[in-house]
Picture (cartoon, rainbow, N blue to C red):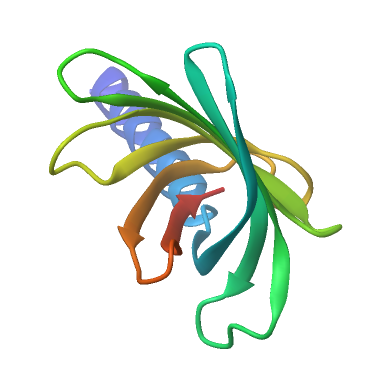
Length: 138
């Protein structure tokens, strides 16, 4: 009987520890619009640099980005990008997108975004701009 009670007590403590850890995670959603400044070809890749502006107020510059796009097979594109938000920190994205797929994994961050993991969703806008939605947990 003591073993059963001890096992039940340990189980309750383990579940409480997992719940406490999960509740400590913070979900963040950032929406920005890209403004391409310049782009150039590097071997098989295409590198783009530009500004990030607040999606709600496009006159408000919030950071910069650099992205490298590499052609893959079957109309897919490899993406490696870093979005830097001033002195706040940066988010790193790496993955592959193809037709009908507009999500790329967020694989890390620095500064205020340290330990970020989630997804970046993209949507093309008029005038060579792209809406980026970063959704991540820390």
